[in-house]
Image (cartoon, rainbow, N blue to C red):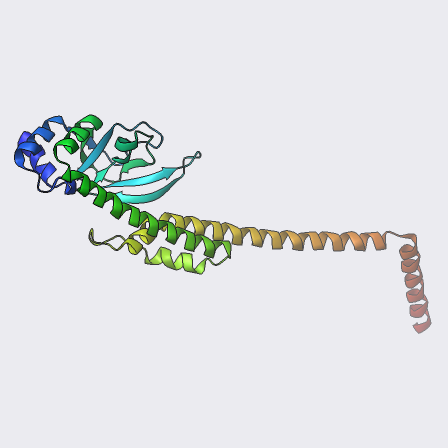
Length: 250
């Protein structure tokens, strides 16, 4: 089991180049975790006292609202590290992490990780590089979301729908930030399409209601006219004139 954990740690990008003895020491402190599809590794708002090293499988990082809706912020797979932000600022988890397929991860507690950083300061540079890459992606993601939000605000859903059709799963981990951002925002695109469909349906219902209102108003106006004494007298006179004309013709 120790050898297996050591080999798993070697595949973690953060620990590339770390000697076997130190990997063994780290492996003794790491907790082996398994998660089924849909199971959460951490929840937004929880206290964070550990980081997770993804051995195999895939997880999604999502932001949740009070109604239970979610927006996918990122996805991570084998070799990647998640949850390390809370180890440094000791703040609450900023997002929820959910397994999108059966996932194995190693959990490392805060103090054990900080002890390792003290022993191997060069790991700090690897962590900084990892967080910088995520920050760059987050910037691209936000820019893309703002761009599409402007289209929706202007009532232009064609661009959003086009993005939905073109957003396909990545073929490899080297997916460019812009392409990955578009793919992860596909749920947002679909939501926009649903809003557009509801908007179109509402417009149709409003038009139908207006026609019904116009027809009701027309009948009411006819009834108001035909219900007057003047109209009744006029109708009676017209009938009398028709009879007289018929009598004269006969």
